[in-house]
Length: 175
Ligand SMILES: CC(C)(COP(=O)(O)OP(=O)(O)OC[C@H]1O[C@@H](n2cnc3c(N)ncnc32)[C@H](O)[C@@H]1OP(=O)(O)O)[C@@H](O)C(=O)NCCC(=O)NCCS
Image 1 (tube, rainbow, N blue to C red):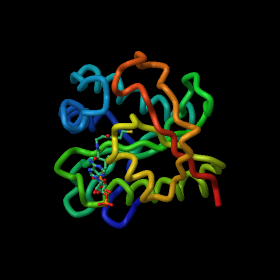
Image 2 (cartoon, protein in one colour):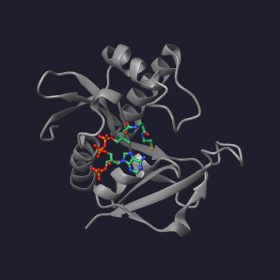
Image 3 (cartoon, helix red, strand yellow):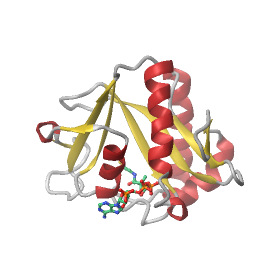
Image 4 (tube, rainbow, N blue to C red):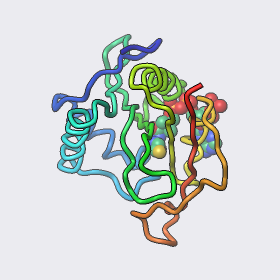
């Protein structure tokens, strides 16, 4: 699948070096509990490949069309943790820092939303992030997702009082 500037491809183990480098960057991981070691990135890559095998969708690896450089990921995961809106299908994104600020996340997300609604037949797609992650919330707004503050929640995998615990939820229903 393609967007204007990106190729969206299935993750494979060949992505490990680029994926691990992105996940080891403390700026990229500012709104996550910790950066990932190479071993943790390898385990996550394995989970993403397994998620696609089990559910038929997963995160896509993104490459610039211009020079094939890996820039990050966007795509879908099942959200199965206990919350008022789960089970749900989540759209998520993460980009290497050199690629920030060029509108690549909303561009890739729009391609994924079309794929999710038209090809996967999803009826609703959600996105969530720590309430302090304004950049990610801005991407949600730019792609037309809706935010009802009554949907906001404390992430069950984070301790109460952790600054990352409070999460915003955005939703988009098939038109
Ligand atoms: C979030 C992320 C994917 C955005 O990707 P991107 O391709 O740089 O997105 P954009 O180019 O559209 O820029 C982000 C928008 O946020 C805005 N922004 C940046 N910093 C901001 C801040 N501190 N507060 C509010 N808005 C901010 C930018 O101005 C831009 O909006 P604009 O186009 O209206 O000016 C990228 O920053 C990233 O990978 N972050 C680390 C991983 C992450 O947090 N993932 C999400 C976890 S749920």
